[in-house]
Length: 414
Ligand SMILES: *[C@@H]1O[C@H](CO)[C@@H](O)[C@H](O)[C@H]1NC(C)=O
Ligand SMILES: *[C@@H]1O[C@H](CO)[C@@H](O)[C@H](O)[C@H]1NC(C)=O
Ligand SMILES: *[C@@H]1O[C@H](CO)[C@@H](O)[C@H](O)[C@H]1NC(C)=O
Image (tube, rainbow, N blue to C red; front, side):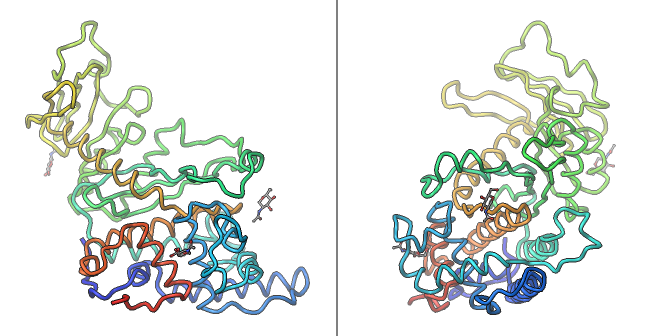
């Protein structure tokens, strides 16, 4: 749960600013102004530009965030006069001013020495966000490492024509998270840049389990020694990784697939299916130290590797049609935690900012902001403020937009 008690009068922006505080926004102001200056030194002066202020930067974020509620792909629709236009928002800042800020928007100073790292234009922001996540929230013991749903098609496609949609480039990165399985709070983010970059570039992650090991190690950097249990999918599950994690006090429970997993060191006898399928709910176990490899049959062979649960402990899977199917506790726990995560995915992936910039660092930035807002809502729901205002996720988002844009006092209405 939350590490500090927020007052019952805390507003949406107060929760958001646990992760994106004023000093971070002020830095965006400085960097944007600096970039505009450099740009003009190079390409000639821009008579329409005046330096951006903190209030304008907040409004700028508010406009972008409004696309997570309207699901409109073009933030400029606010001023369009059409279906997605929003007069009260449009009156706060002119479209021309918004587009100027968008043109020069930067969050990190340019340093040529670091330019080899593809994410250098956003990494310091990601680090500060991570610090905010770490200090504001203590996760439950059980967590999931996975790739969350982030590219939901917008419910309505407003200003994009078919052709524009087809032209839209593929994402050049994948986003992985470590997520608390009892609240849905995203504890840690890892951005993996795809090799080759371009739309035809090879996605190195796809075929190489050892790269998934890198992702998992990075996601668990701050988890060492905390006795956590992490659930993993087949691309991450491996004996080598789990043994390495055990030495660091991180315990695992992962689904294994002979096609997608790195099966190095696992007994072959357990990886091949017997000629005759066993009865439903039957399982075989092989152990080494604390590690057990479970092969469980339920109309198909399912294999799990775990050092977090004793294979002797019984569990059960309850199916609507076929009733109870016996299984080891590890299998029950895996299924339960994965279904929690699917529920959070269903609920929160609808609220990702749908504006899609061309630049990879900007795409990463807006995804990270979206995650910060979902996390802010999760903290809000656990606070006294929720008992007063009881906003749904959509209402919380609208309220945040209005507060950032400056249409509301930040004190609650009553
Ligand atoms: C099993 O795990 C415990 C901690 O849970 C550890 O102390 C012990 O060394 C482990 N045993 C082996 C054989 O790895
Ligand atoms: C993004 O790229 C497309 C095609 O390359 C271009 O037409 C469009 O103007 C770009 N958008 C922005 C905001 O730069
Ligand atoms: C304009 O946007 C704000 C903030 O998202 C929202 O509260 C309001 O209902 C919107 N107005 C219209 C007319 O859509």
